[in-house]
Amino acid sequence: NKQIILKDYVNGFPKESDMELKISTIKMKVPEDSKFVLVKNLYLSCDPYMRPRMKKTEGSYTDSFTPGSPIVGFGVAKVVDSAHPKFKKDDLVWGITGWEEYSIIKAPDSLFKIHNTDVPLSYYTGILGMPGITAYGGFYELCSPKKGETVYVSAASGAVGQLVGQFAKLSGCYVVGSAGSKEKVELLKNKFGFDEAFNYKEEQDLSAALKRYFPDGIDIYFENVGGKMLDAVLLNMRIHGRIAVCGFISQYNLEQSEGVHNLFCLISKRVRMQGFLAADYFPLYQKFVEMVTPHIKEGKVTYVEDIAEGIESAPGALVGLFSGRNVGKQLVLVSRE
Ligand code: NDP
Image (cartoon, rainbow, N blue to C red; front, side, top):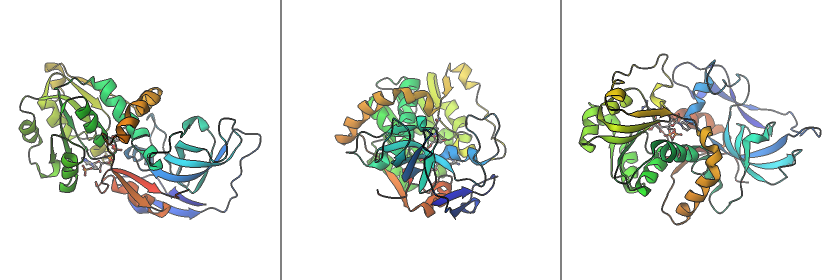
């Protein structure tokens, strides 16, 4: 059983060498008097929240990973053996699993059965998995979009951002996205249908860039990045604007968060800014799937994935999120069946 192990807690930018491949010869067997499930992992998801879990954290919403043990994260798997009444051999599932070829899952509450297989299975790490419900809940539930409003999305070509942009277009909004390369900016405009897009790395003055695209201000900001970007956005928000605080990826590798200087804009502009977790919206998962699946089938919503092949490539794929190497949802193919 090949496994990807976190060697030790990580400081600063994560490196591939913070993880190592180990081959375990321990026989994987489901204890009969348990409710455990043995799964074969097919796809593993690389997500930015995994970085905070690589350091020793206390009081965070997620626990630290355990050095010396396999990384834990979302994935798609096939049930090989089950002592749990809800799951049987050959069921396809998505949810929390281990970065290894086979895992024994002790809490199958975090596994969802896959019923619809006429979309790519890998979608359950992205558009039909945690990033999908994040985009759906954060945008529709928290931002209450109205036709004609102006929407800005940062890290817009990624797992979550590409969907938020498409949902904003479906809602009749004007939407602008930013990303870190020319290729990604092209994708935003030509594949995902953003009205405008720009490369934030080429802008000296982020606030001036935002003014160019939003001369009358931003109604909705879907925040993926934090730091300087958030500060520039605050200056450009409209009165009664909304900010969904999804993530702060620019801050995850810093020892100390950068200061935000323009928070007073929340008061002067009566802006509502709210943080949220994907898990808040898991109860809406069925409603979300019913909304998004017909759009996928009709080609009205599209999804770009960046698939690394083989479990050995998982550390590099995860680390790549923090330099923007991924184009679209980053995942790892472990086995096709
Ligand atoms: P992505 O697929 O967007 O991958 C991360 C991207 O972030 C990179 O490709 C890179 O794109 C960009 N990035 C990396 N470092 C920086 C930086 N210093 N400044 C600006 N951009 C940077 O990831 P996801 O879509 O999965 O996640 C996006 C955000 O949503 C993250 O902040 C994540 O933590 C958050 N999130 C929150 C959830 C919740 O429950 N609240 C659930 C899921 C995600 P580029 O080339 O454009 O720089």
